[in-house]
Length: 431
Image (cartoon, rainbow, N blue to C red; front, side, top):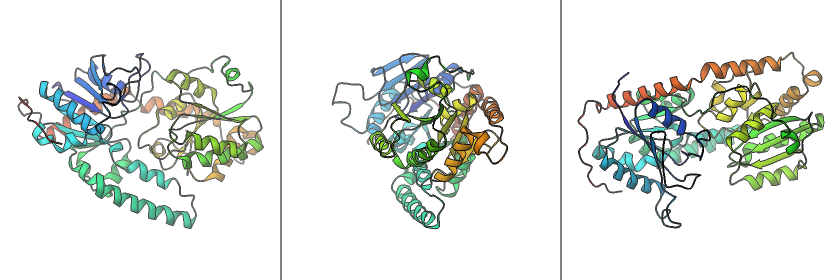
């Protein structure tokens, strides 16, 4: 690995930093790892939860563009704000590489030759996540398969020719989480595998210490001590992703009267999900606490027997699901999401098609009442043990950081930028 110090700019709308060093967001641990390796790291994002426009910590400089005077900083689109801020920073001290976790860096990419900088995107910058979400609506019937195929084809052609093709032309590299995404990127998005890198660096898992259920936490939630808990975490952007779970739970309650479902998260469809929950007369058995902080989320994970995430929108590995596996919980994931390449059916977890309500009912009933409903011998305790072991073997933060840095060097080598002279001056760039 090269030892040249890199100046790296991380860009995205969801790169958060909280008020405490242990309470971090998606990519702050990534930035910390890069900084600890001796690289110069700058973050450009939207807003900071601690309501500061600038945060300098852990050797990292973070700029939040929507934290200025009310009404003034939101006049321009975020990508315009990013370009303006980047030009200012790049003029003072040029960056080697820009890593955009979504499409926020696109306008920088359009000007990368003049700026003499290289640009890498996460797979989240493309519309692949939305295609997976449409696929999740397929319930297996011929009519449903035909309908979703038409929707996927139309959405792909629309997004590819209106957005993805132009965006990918500005990319010097794309980061994927799984080999499946890498294959789809080459086959359908026509992006060369030569410039694709598979590094699941977005996982922030802490120390993965086994945790005991917090004392009196069930009492706080007004749940009986012997209750069995199903936990799900969602961004509440798509009601259809939670509808099968709620309808399945409605049937599970009839077989297991002492079961509860906790739905954590907040988003634009929260009220619609709550309405559906009440319509199914599940008000006394479903708890929707909204968003919770990292510490409280761990309490909920420790509390549950089963963790369910049927979302196919995310193109990454959901950290809370990996954390649940580390806590030896029985996890159920979508066979259409990246977690399908991490979970081995009936060995360290379970996979279902998100719209397959009946399979989900059977599976949840078997897990909650193995002695009564299971038709085959499944050692759920052993599945939990193997789930934890899988996580411990697979997620080494140090190796992830090193793999990411090596990918940066490879991107720069392929563009011959490592051997080029430093940029002395940045010319004015139009939008």
